[in-house]
Image (cartoon, rainbow, N blue to C red):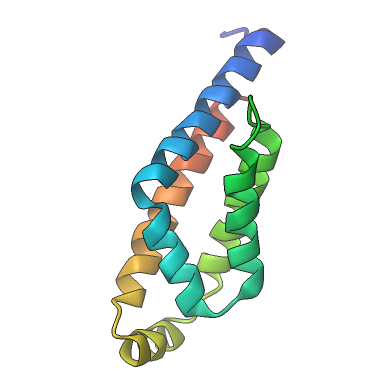
Length: 116
């Protein structure tokens, strides 16, 4: 049986938070475009909160994880026909973007789960 100390867990969760930060540096603009296209102001505000968490010297892993969960729920709640309609109106591959970002958010959340 693997025994972890609170310090190991905290370090792992902090590493997960930094993985989110790296992901946002690479793909944050696309996620922002997607959330804007969906027209849900709460999703955009959550993304802003997520970016704000990295404005601190050491991001709070709970804040980062909570924001990711909120974004995951927002993306999972989208109806495929609505995504297709929005994509057609905006000229964006919104369905593909939602699937891709949803999968990446799930992968990032798994890092937090494995830290427990």
